[in-house]
Length: 303
Image (cartoon, rainbow, N blue to C red; front, side, top):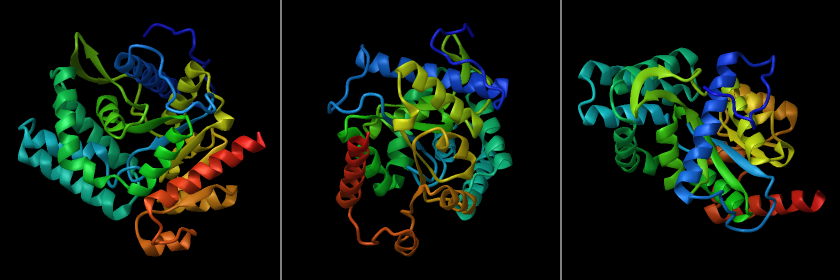
């Protein structure tokens, strides 16, 4: 991959593969956004143009893992055999019961997906992704998190998904939710056909932080003014980059870290859990969005 002038130098804390994965994801995100609009993205409301929000996808914006829902959709379209579906079903069941990302399970799922899409055209997967979103994902979006994202948009900020799911699928989800774009795992393609290899590594853990850092450099964002949201302790590197980190539906490790660092906590899984972190169980989407918009306005006045 050719060096790009806006990319930041490599950092010792990240592996070369993490940096490569992050920078490839940022470049794919910028390219996709500009292809849709035909120009640099505009703000729906004139606001703080150097602020943005970054949302993890799995169990933060959407219940469950996007990659597993994608696998079910591919099985329905006869991309692979029943024994492969059984593995996807087990991984999804484990993910939902545990509520956390296990690197071994996630890696196995990604390896399976790569072998399945090898030889298929990128355009074909994008088209199928639209159908799979309607079939399996649309009804699994957390209304509370969606309201938070909308509050950032209403405040004139760009909003990006950041996920280990394939970037093409992540971009479909972002567009269907009305968000700015998405950072995701970049699968290598030659002549518009998947090779079965990744560019760098999956966008997970440190690689997510690298993608956010690279995109911020490209878009002239001030990370101290930005917000990030995630459910997983694996995303602590990304959350630590921004001035306004939020733990959403957090796993136990992230909850503990968030309390230590005095990060904000939100839980949309059940009324009981929501009450534990100070959110009225009966609060509507509008109330959540209004509260977030007010918080953003307060941060602006303070600056």
